[in-house]
Image (cartoon, rainbow, N blue to C red; front, side, top):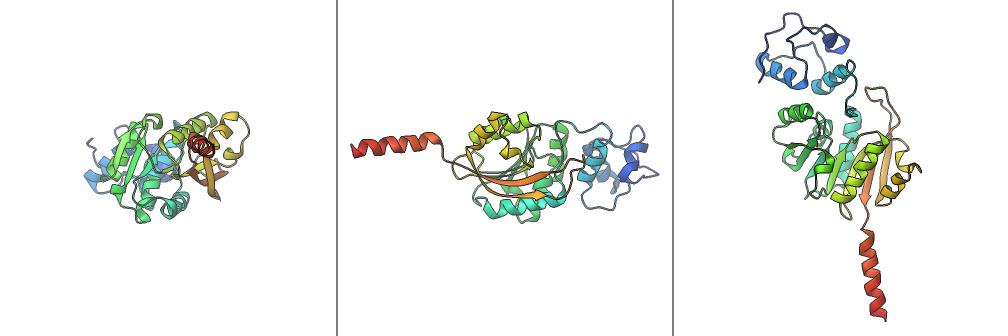
Length: 252
């Protein structure tokens, strides 16, 4: 744990803290958490109830968004969690893919999901660090989604928005999910209907689109036009081919 002296003059988080932050004052989310544990208060004035999300959004206004890290707004996270609780298999753990600071994990817990029933992973060590501190009873891993090779029956995620990265994410879904498995995703509006590049439709044919809702609130980065989407994994094509082949032989 990094130690900090108590800040005499605390600026408001919104538009002020990172603008006036002095050398040696908490910068990263993990450092802010350490300061909170040491002094019983945040290093900035804050009246909200989700400081990790708001601090990350403020921090991103300066260096910019890194690795497509657009955090899920509270209202959207609640919408996704409600959809997950309604459709997911209760006997299987929920994987919060690309978990970030844990916005979706937070919403799942608020919906009654026990933390021990959640697994979170992200490629960013800093985000996994704060995720582990905020949700110590949730299993957390620093990994790229491509490195996850175990079955994920229930996935909730705000995946990368760039088209190429999103296609890779869906390709990964086809490998870790089986027939009947669900995923609740936050996607750019219109992504699943794109005809180009061709890889989008080639990947989407593995899934059934069950439900979706356009998100009315914008992301902190200013992007909008997002859609909460529930998808279900179709049965593997080779399974149907095998059944048809056996049926044909039986008829002969």
